[in-house]
Length: 191
Image 1 (tube, helix red, strand yellow):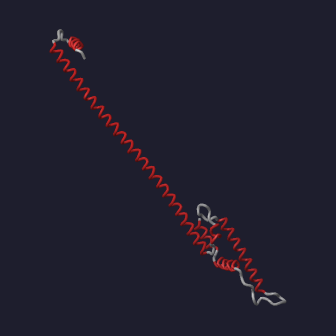
Image 2 (cartoon, rainbow, N blue to C red):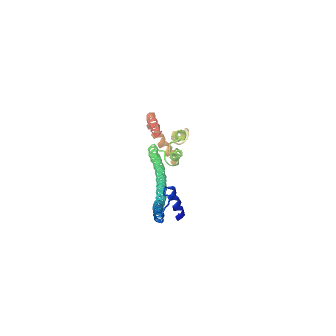
Image 3 (spheres, rainbow, N blue to C red):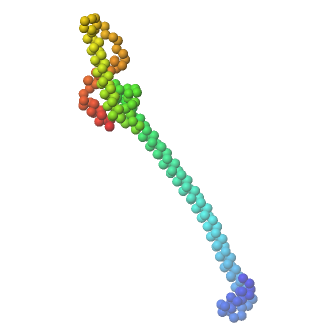
C-alpha cells in the first residue's frame, strides 16, 4: 500500500487532514497486520502440508493393512482347503480299512471311491455281485472236481487251486459268515 492509498483510507475513516506521522503509523499498523496474517497463512500452509503428508502415511498404512488382511484371508482359505483335503484322505483311509477287513483291497477298493472320497455304492454293488458270482463259480468247480468221474478214476487228487479260486472261496466264506444287518450297518456308516 502506498502513502497516498493510506491517506485516502484515513480520510475515509474520518481523519480530515492526516499528518505524516498518522500516515506512517497507519501504514505500520496495516503492514504489521498484513505480516501477521501472512505469517498465520504460512503456518496454516505448513500445517496443511503436514496434514497432506500424514494423510499419505495413513493411506499407506491402510493399504498395507488391506493387503495384510487379504494375504491373511488367502492363507486362511488355503489352510481350509488343506484341512478339507486331509479330512477327505482320513475318511478314505478309514473306509479302506473297513473294506480291507471285509477282504476288499487293492484296485477293487480304489474303484469304490468317487472324486470326493465317498464310497460309490453302485460300484460297491457291482463288486459284490461279481465277487458272489466268482465265489459261486469257484465253489461249483470245486464240487465238480471233488465229485470225481463216475465210471473212472477221480476225486482222489483234486487239481491245485489258483490264487483267484482261493481268494473267491475265502471271500465267499467271509460273506456267508457276515449277516445282512452288518452289511446294512456298514452301508449306513459309509454314507
